[in-house]
Image (cartoon, rainbow, N blue to C red; front, side, top):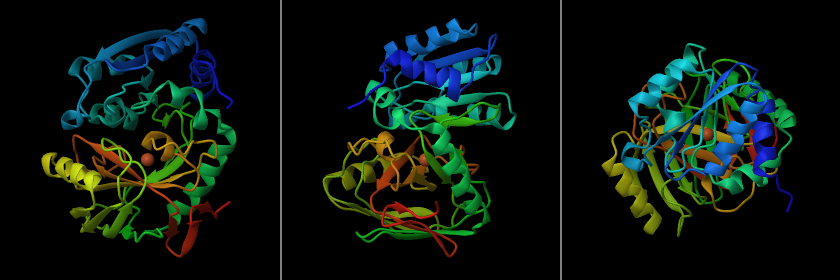
Length: 325
Ligand SMILES: [Fe+2]
């Protein structure tokens, strides 16, 4: 299988996707589980082009406080131009409220590499043609922007609908070259938070789930007025139910996302698979990043296979195949 070296990957991220300029300041946020070889490769690349880097290391957060950045780090983000979230245990640099405030003020741009390993940075989705992906993301977002409802079904029985339009769809296709932009690496999705309180129906999750892993059997969630009311299935369902009962607002339907990346691997890892072309993910918990008002300690993506997606009357994904191109 073709792969990049950490140095090649870092060059792509710093020079092309984040487009760091000489004199710009870049903060790389790690935790105790981060791939430090990648942090150093990114820092070297910033250094080589005449930028200034800081690597900060925070505690590895459990799901109970997964979206909390230490105040010292949150505050120091006001003094940089770019952030790279490299935390492994949690997605705090991506989902923390302080970061969203800086995006909204057009004072920060960022690449999220959270909850990922070196495999993610060097193989699979990392190898995509990001210009092509971005063009496809723009096309899907243009259709999405016009719609006021979304519906997702799967062969296993998912049938969920929600109203949309209070927040704009977000294109995450690798590039974050302007202040206020955020992308991930690897990347390739368009997503949106549904209008709060409007999601209704059933979600049957057969792909990997954040903080839970690959389900032993499909997990069936019943959703009423934007909240999960029952979670049924086997061990994975019990684990997910425990988190949803324990963490405030973890029952909130926070995001619908459509994966676009043709290079993403189908390897049972939620961060890799949620970007895979034709997969859908639906997230529970915090929706601040998506323009909502509901804060939670978690933002948990759940991957669905072979989805069909309607944006109003337009089918954009049919049985796992993109149909909007
Ligand atoms: Fe997403």
